[in-house]
Image (cartoon, protein in one colour):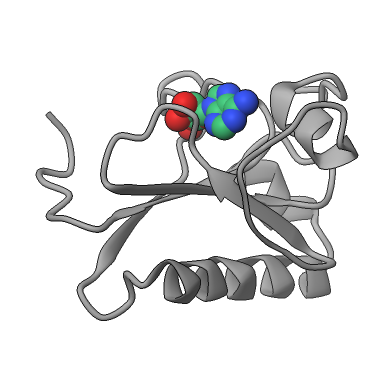
Amino acid sequence: MVYDKNNIFARILRGDIPCNKIYEDEFALAFHDIAPKRKVHALVVPKGDYVSFDDFTRDAPANLQAGFYKAVQKVAAQLGVSADGYRLIANTGGDGGQEVPHFHVHILGGEIVGPLVT
Ligand code: AMP
């Protein structure tokens, strides 16, 4: 799939539209999900034009991949969910239920997240 530079997360990364920012570094931006599914529901997006986990993991440079996943851990720690636990979700493609075509990881926690799939 060709990357759409006007997807909503690309626009947030460019600063065209606001977000409720949690964390930012050279590799990633994290913000609160606009429609939280649990007490804590954050999104972490890499700073690069990648549609999904699939092309990010296949094509992104190693330093971006490492920096991105380290950022996910830092965001979880900053949100205070590391001790009690949390769930990472990376919906991928149509069957995976991905709505926004810019790779992102959901961090869900702050309470028992519940069954993996309902
Ligand atoms: P996914 O189905 O994995 O692509 O998830 C996309 C997520 O982005 C959903 O949980 C939405 O609630 C969230 N979302 C969409 N637009 C925004 C926005 N402007 N700010 C924050 N979260 C958003």
